[in-house]
Image (cartoon, rainbow, N blue to C red; front, side, top):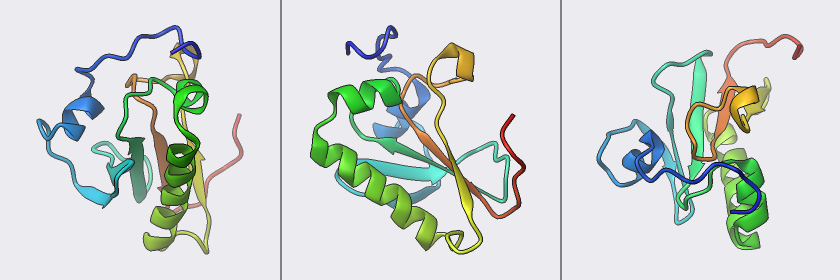
Amino acid sequence: MSASKTTYDPNNIFAKILRGEIPCKKVYEDDFVLAFYDIVPISPVHVLVIPKNPYVSFADFTANAKPEEIACFMKAVGKIAKDLGIEEDGYRLVTNIGKNSGQEVPHFHVHILGGRQFGPLG
């Protein structure tokens, strides 16, 4: 995992969700991706999309995942937003990378946020 200074922790909460040790309110699942509602939402629609393989961050994912896995992940994010009915009004994608960004779980994930108007990023 040369793209990240953080080692993957197999006991992080998303790894436990993937193993079925912690339940989630599933939105979507395929061979590469699991998506579920955030338990502390910051918008009316707040879904987390995670790869099933162990990547610490976006940097780790893009450096080490196979092209097929990256493509499937990105297509899944778009499909989920469309299926949630937020595509037309708009939505925000957020991924935090490392401690300065506020990344809390060391497993790459994308937040799909929608259902309200967002201001500019600051």
